[in-house]
Image 1 (cartoon, rainbow, N blue to C red):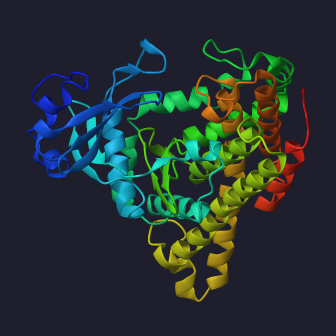
Image 2 (image 1 turned 30 degrees about the vertical axis):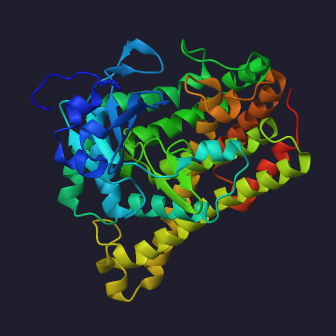
Length: 421
């Protein structure tokens, strides 16, 4: 395929164009047995399930534009390069937590990867009130292992700087994040949309000087603090689950940025899911119980992240930062612990801020979440979204004083009990 010019795949052309690739047929069987269905429901790409005599694979291909908007918003195909490179790094740093890559074609901007049998998108589970045992723990481990091991705390300095230069080329997707997450929600950007009943709260937020300044401080941190290789778009639509198993997908927004970014974005999506529960579960007692489970899972994400980060700090801190020659080698274990606590506190503050702006952009910006959008009753949807907006603001503004996940969940429960419209 690489010798031919780029051409978008269709279900009818997949077999003819991929059938001779041994890495694909080894997992799906001979191409004459393939059945192909297009299942992409995301904002950017084509996604196909290929089912053959030997099994199934996923084929993901970038389009030269933003699928959600259309050809009026061009987007380079090279994002497939960054997704492929992020996946293989994540596989090495957090084994078993991402799909296995079988084949990558740069010219055709496509990745062929493992089909996750019986897995579903976590976002869909959350709308159905399904519980997954140990989910927060798994996702906390994924964050800690990928973010610590992709940073100057762990990596060889020369390798990391070369890698930083490589991912710095993911310019267009970083531009999407920088504008859609940190700026567009706070003014009347052309592609913004929101539920009309939210107008009074939207006007209030867009006139909130402290909030806008804080959002720009967070944007500066995202743009300037190249601490580690991020997933870059870690939310409940980027996690697939099956019982007590979980895998993380879709890292095409990968770039170097603050460690707290992925953690905060992920926790935000659990908090939004909790806000949306009344739109999907009818029974009041069931709503409260499931919101408690979601908040407990969000707590597990942070707690397990911090625990594993601590383990890695003590056992894998081999990079240029906080070298053992300054601490342990001088019998100053307490110094190393002080540094660790300082770093975790900074990551926590960042995570809270990123969490809050993510909650805003998913209600006020271009790319919304299904938990809100699929609430048919517009009045109920607006009430759920209003709680999300107010919780997001509280986290952004209070990130210097909110100390623990218990503080966050207590705040969330207080806001979930109020009506802001």
